[in-house]
Length: 109
Image (cartoon, rainbow, N blue to C red; front, side):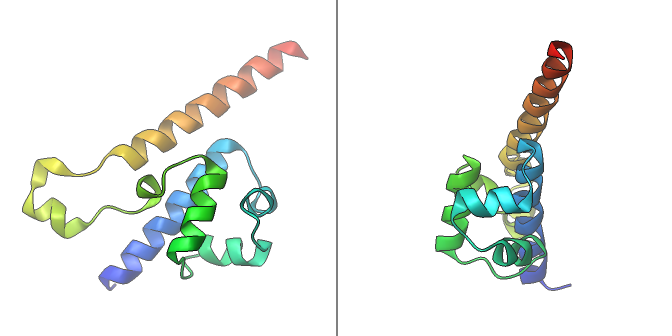
């Protein structure tokens, strides 16, 4: 697999994971980002995501675009201890928040 494919797939996965963490459907994300549903689906499947599209999605998700962007594996090879763990940390925190909100909501019913 080429480097570009890995980067595109990682970006798609990060966007999808952030959307899931918020408990949103593809339609909800598309609506909040003011994009077509089919375009969001295409991006989440690894389609091309230009800078302006990434900015719209990141604003809708409430996450800085840098967090959604995959890290550069070559930079990690050059500096082994300096990899960017923030995307994983942010998505984990979002999952935790959604889980706690869901748990609390279940007690109110």
